[in-house]
Structure formats: structure tokens, C-alpha cells
Amino acid sequence: MESTRTFRDKVFLILKGLGMGAANKVPGISGGVVAFVAGFYEEFIYSLRKINLKAFKLLINGRFKSFYTYINGRFLALLFLGMIVSYFSVSKVLDYLIKYYELYVWSVFFGMIIGSIYYINKDFKDWNYKTYLSLMIGIVFGIAISFLNPAKENDNLWFVFFCGIISVSGMTLPGFSGSFILILLGNYVLLLVESVNALFDTFFNVFEGDFSFVHDMARIRMLKVLVVFTLGSVTGLITFSHVLSYILKHYKSITISTIIGFIIGSLGVVWPWKKTIYKLTENGHFILDSRGEKVVENFKRYMPELNIETYYAIAFIFLGIAIVLALEIYGQKTRKAHV
Image (cartoon, rainbow, N blue to C red):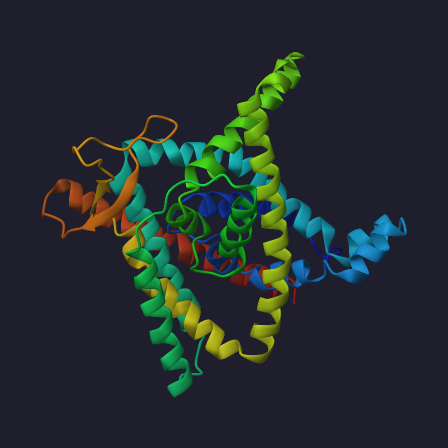
């Protein structure tokens, strides 16, 4: 598998990691959809499934090269390198774009998800009463999740570990947005913003030779939260990959039809024309998070007005669809080149 991977493939794999990392950061978007559309989803699940007891035995016995080869290490390393870079760079660009060009950003995402539905559905031919039922269950579940209200922030370490397990599901299950689930659990800002910023600040302090942060209890607490969240994510990633691999092997048609339904049902999460509803106190004041920003309660969807802004947004929807189709064409060429 690795011997046939060219330098160009490796660069594109890092770029795909960037895409997965950015997608995992944005509520409503799933990193698994990027993997699915870009044509490396099955290799991703296969590689994660190889992180098992045999792999740990190789590692413990000091057979590092065998361990690296067994788990398809170069593939995972390049992919996760892209995700890590994305976490500290691309995602910040997305944060900026969402802040100042929210309608257009969500329009692109909306188009990408429509394109993803087309991509997953176009080669799926096994439609019967079971898969139609699975499709409907997926749609209902997706709609239900998109209309839930967020919970309050909770930094209990056991709950943080659980959040890690749940949030990483978006990487293994296309259409299931881990970041949106973190919003519903109330810990999106804590785990994907504050703790990451604490790590970034710590790296910067260490680089400057400033170790005064060791006496900053708030910083240390944030770093503990990030470590526990990471451990939960790794646990969830390995666990979900084994479970999903088994399910795809024995119930592939039902699983794919459920995924299609879930993605369709989740379209409301990224509907471009929505008004943000904020949480209020009893006397009508906004509830603020630890960064002093208003806490989102839910979104009110509405139909767009016919104006120039709407026409631009529709154009961006088609851009999102085009991006997915371009990824599909590239994925087909890559798969043919490796045959």
C-alpha cells in the first residue's frame, strides 16, 4: 500500500487531512464525509482497525518498524499531520470567515453536503424495504439532533473523556458532526477553543523559555482537560473504527442507507439562512460564555429574500457542490492509478 504512494499522493493526503481537520471543527460538517468523498474512507477505517492487540504487542516488544508497517503508519501519520496543522491554522481561517462572511460560508458547506449525498447515493443500488426504513430512521435522527438545544458547559474530566469519545465519531461516521454534538453537550468552546488556545499559549511560552504557566492553575486545568479529551478521542477513534468495520462488513447496505438519511436530516444544521437565537436570563440579558461571547441556544431557519446577497449565496452553494464533484473526480483517478 505504501510502496505505491508517490510524493504527489503524500502531499494530497496531507491536504485531505487539512480538509478533515477543518470539517471536524465546523458544526454540521463531518470529517468522515471528506474521507468518503475523497476516496480514502475505507483505507482510513482499515488502518484504524489495525491498531489492535497485535499492534500493541509489536510496540511493546520494540518492533517499531513492524508496528509502523502493520498499522499503515505512513498513511495515518500524513493524514493526522494535516489534521493537526488544520487545527491551528485552517480552522482559524474558517473561524474568521464564519464571523465576517457567515452566509456565504454556510452556503458552501450546504452545497458540499448536497454533493456528498449525491456522491454516496450514486453508486448505491441495493434499495429495498430494509434500506428504505434505514434511510427514514437516519433522516428522523438527523432532524431530531439538529433541533436539540445545547446543554451547559461541564469540565468534569469523566464527562470530558466521554465528549472525546463522542466527538471523534464524525471522523469515522460520515454525516455525523462531532463538533455539533459538542455544542449540544455544551462543551464546544471549552474543548475546541479554550483548551486548544491554552496549548498554543503553552507552546509559545516554552519556546520563549517562560515556564511561569506551571503556577497558573487555570492554564494547568485547561491542559488537563485537553489531555483527557485527547485520550477520549483516541479511545473513540479506535473503538468506532472496529465497530464500524464490523458493521460495514456485515450490514453494509443498511449502514450506507442510514448514513445517507442522517446526512439528509442534518441539512438543517447548515441551512445558510438562519438566525442565531441566544440564551437569555430571566431579566432579558444575554448569557455570556467564559470568553464574553453570547451563548448560542438554537437557530431559527427562514426562507431567503430575493436580493443580490441571496444570489451570491446560491452561487456559493453551487461552488460547494463543484468542490465535492472535483474531489470525486480526483478520487476516481487515484483509485484507477492504484489498480
